[in-house]
Image 1 (cartoon, rainbow, N blue to C red):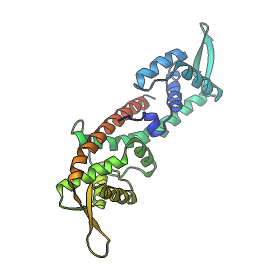
Image 2: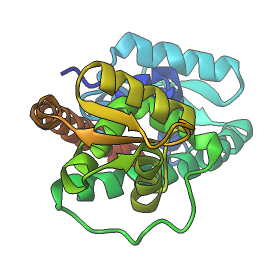
Image 3: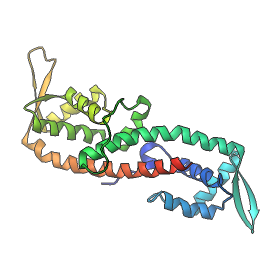
Image 4: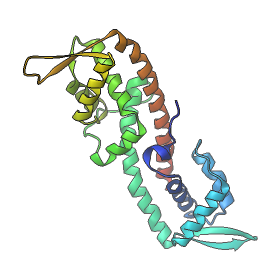
Length: 246
């Protein structure tokens, strides 16, 4: 399974990453593009960019007034400007809280799935609505819900889909919308992963029970989800570590 890059997943583009990295480096001392290119690969493993692109972003940053260039030993060197320093602070404020809150949800999922690492305290608040789209880009929300619904079906004689949402909120501080939960429940019934029955003639509550097909499929979705969460968690750790340095 191909895991999307952090930039592809979260909307933190390659250009955003390079711009932030440039400002971080030149805020400490004037730097050559070649040095930035080498350091970038070491800071963000798996996120390779060409030297020409690093130099092109530097020129764009200079045109925007965030950096200024000078010639040293026959090569172009860049330094930060006052506007660039302000921009660096804006990057920090804009991204750090967003990624930190999303990372907390991912860390809870990671521990729940693997029982490795540090167990976090139960969430006091739900993930902010502004950050939910980023989590949805990082993870397969469909896999999260299918995993939790199938696991619940093994431990209860029957359950409601609303209980899946409640459990996600209690464990991780996040859940998709009720509309999505019920949409996916219908899909799982159509694929024989669950069997649904109305509680009474009023058809207000539909309870679900496990199937043999659901038991077999559970291991597939579990493996997929574990791989995804582990990969996303690694990306978040890299970016948060870097943001803390800025």
